[in-house]
Image (tube, rainbow, N blue to C red; front, side, top):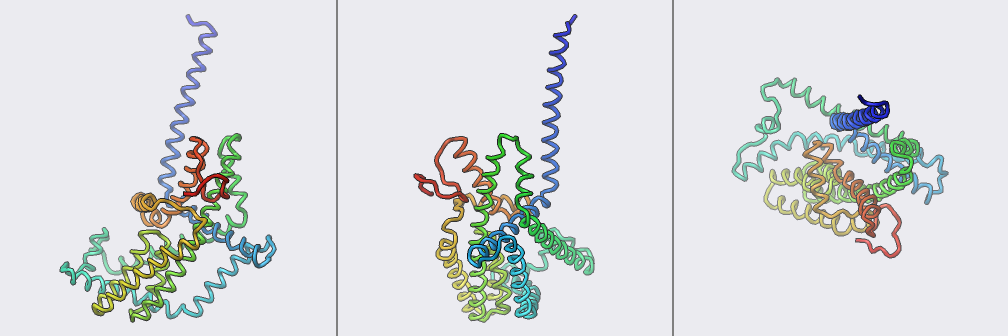
Length: 358
């Protein structure tokens, strides 16, 4: 028979086994829940990016405009709203007509391009290629498109509102995240989050400047060439530039397709304009505005974007690069520097003496 001591050790081992099983099951359940809530988590990450932009503008107002710190964030939000309102008043009607014109003429432009390649009309095959039910009625398809647009607008508004809340009290959310880790790791996690936030701010500010430059240069170039709806095409090119590597190609496609509906000379000038603008953005504008920003190896960044698109769809494609920035900073700081003991510069941190960036 087992004595009291043996029973006690048996109970302890069984309790430890049950505890470990429960921990494994809990981790697995959390992973499943996180996977099911992928879109929500990506929208939350988008809200963080909005908060970073607002904080960056607020910091500029405090530093250069001498706006009191307690009013800086509100002033930044009001300035952004006023800027959008002014743009809508000045160009809203014209831009809306041009966007509608682009949506109407794009299928014809796509068909014209594919005919030149000997592929026939493709626009009629797009619903089947995209998995859309072609047998459904016209009203059902219109309702589906309208629902998708409204859903996208709702997500956009949600991200903006949540971003304002996060920017208003970033320490609250940061402290809450830090408390999810053991007490002994709080300082380490806090320091890592600050480095990630600074790296994202540097990248976002530079990216917004580059996007604005691409939108303005593209609009002027397309207007000079004589493409229809040049400002809408330029706006699309600028917005698509948010996605590095892949975005410039996607942003240039509508303009090139429209050029094929005109003549060969227009196609040539459009392609030359697109290449010149992207070369200027990649070799002049971006290096100037992102000297201190995170420099991710191009191949790694490209695969990060493609992986995000494959795993998480459109949101993964949009947020693939900023997520790569976060991962890059954390790996360099927590693994390469602190675990392996290798000296390496971490984006978002001040330059360390004796460390050569690269």
